[in-house]
Length: 141
Image (cartoon, rainbow, N blue to C red; front, side):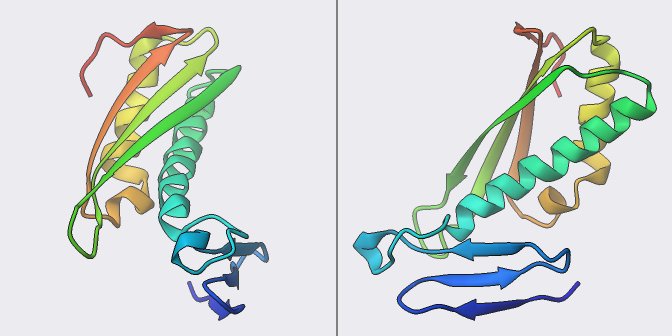
């Protein structure tokens, strides 16, 4: 995969993904940016959620399980010292629908342990939890 990212002045950058979508990034005003786009670290956490979310939906569809609602809440903890990398990322999956818990757990584990290339590209520890129809999951993942 290859792409180009262009500097747009101050702390703003934009790139075009191989899929053709433009991605804008910027820094906060207090560090010289104009706040015209998300921070790269914000995009990284979104990428973890998007990657694992796509995996889980794909796996559940293959199991012929219909999800009616799905939200992920992501918390990232960063080191205090530079490069201030993410040291721990927690994803909570909140799914809705007539979902057998054991199949949801299997889909989450497959994404976490095998498929999500974004989270596997990071050195941060990844932990997960889940709820189905508002009920906290019973299993430890």
